[in-house]
Length: 387
Image (cartoon, rainbow, N blue to C red; front, side, top):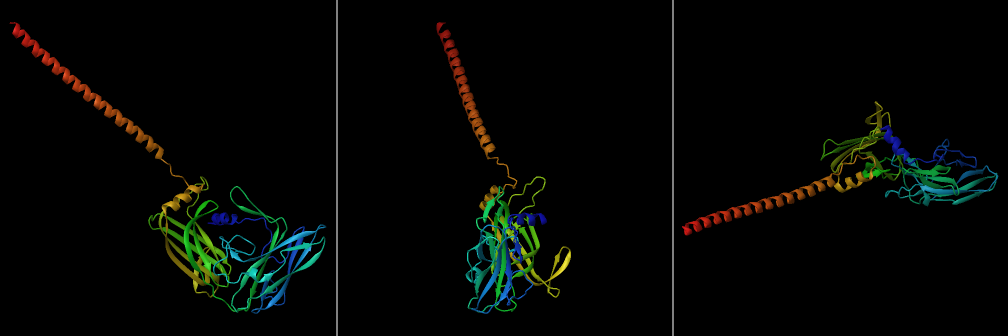
């Protein structure tokens, strides 16, 4: 299972050294530092987590420094927090589509220049103008501000389809709330369907957090059992997951245990399946729910259980198996059957011709015997007439 988690994490591999939790980001070229405001909920944090009333406005600041003797330009990008398929919250821009439950997208409530020009060896403050929605709500709006050197935000894809972000970028998380009221999280199972990750067969379990709060310390245990074929069983577990507010993601369940020696996987089988999923969240010594984590008992405040049947069609299975290079391909004997069919057909005609020739030969022999018999009788009659 650790190998699976490493494999899935590799799909999101980047060469970015900036983290949402980083308070002071530095390269040889420039530095980025958030200036923590007075209404910060926790001033020890290295990112913004502000309390601001409904319809209120505020200007946040980030200090940018150019450490070079040349002018540089910094791209500034705003994005709403999302959850990726490894169960990690991402604050930088991604291609993940916003969830249908997202009512307040952070980039709609923050205004900042898209590009900042820094003269050589200078330091300046960047203003981020924040406006809270005019509606009262409990919970958080979560997102991030990403800084990257202009012209270096290119992405390359290697031969295995792993996307590499070839840039130094830094993302500072920005959380906005109107109060400290606790919000109870919720979790929904949306869909279950076969798919592929990086060309490998998986079964995607789409989970949604429709609430304006994080689901922290998620412990996921999933079992997929075959109904049509009871010998099939896939399992997955991960005790270190998290979901951002108002997000959803596809949790990929592997459909085979790939052999390290042969690097060959069993093909995905069509038929009916059953998903059984248990998710615990928010570790709490007084929590009412228990789960085993690394052979130890952990207690959680929340628990969700799901039990759902789904079907994989013949067409889906064949299409995915054909495009998964690790799947052990079943030998196609069609050509051999075709050849055998042709040979049998030829043999049939040979036998048919032989039987016809044999019959014709027998008829000819019978006719010849009859002629000889008639001739013999005619000779006898002639001899009698001569006497």
